[in-house]
Image (tube, rainbow over the protein chains, first blue to last red):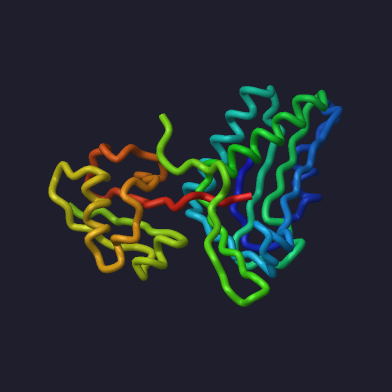
Length: 145
Length: 80
């Protein structure tokens, strides 16, 4: 299991290689990319920033949770920070498991938990030249015990 | 005691800085630190009950701080 905030392009082939094993019948690769529209506004790029040590610690915790729930520790997640252009990968998750159901479920769990509670922020740049910090729908906004 | 506050994204923008050293009385809580920050110029733009983290872990407002702690005020997250 490995979780990292990275500053350059995410090497998804390296992530796949990292979880590869002959005992796995299924490998799921999720790639989140910068989209050209959000909330009906034309987006031209996104700047991501993170509280890096806490983000990495929280992502590592999420991987441990996924390992317990779905019985696989063959999982790796990288999230990129800095300026990203349309189509650039902002996040990639590779999960492998003997069976596909667990691999799909673990991949989804990791992404949804990341979006909800890992301290990463994005500022979208719009076609009209403005920029705005964007909040995630459904993100944690007060501490939940 | 001295506690370092970290600010991010929109919160760093409204306060015009990403970190500030706070001098707080012994026994001060995360809520006390937040009140200190909200008294700074621009600080009233911080929400009254934002997410807080102490030493890299999400923390309650009542968490007691210690000298050298790192308190982060966390805007709504938007990873992915």
